Image 1 (cartoon, one colour):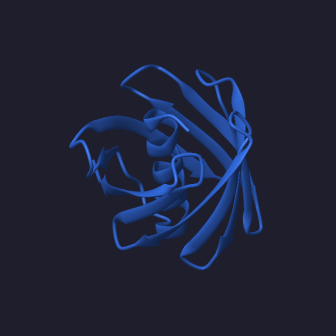
Image 2 (cartoon, rainbow, N blue to C red):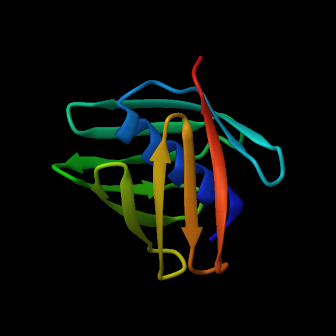
Length: 123
């Protein structure tokens, strides 16, 4: 999975679990940040990655979310269990899992075989 995709997943997962508006996601490994504009209302997922203009659009139903990433041209599915989540990257065909704690998201990417940590920032 690409670094961009991981950051977008962290942003969506953190925003949904925390039920809080955020405006950026920071990758703790490389120190890079991405400006994000996200709306999560009435079961809709509507996010624009201001860093590259990609959009993420989808839906949330119960504990399941799915969205399409325009730049990667693939779908992502998420299943939540409290602050934990599992998911599938339709682009690589690989799974991932993670957890949200406070404004932090930790994601294990099976494609890379390691953990990645992110911090979400409010506007």
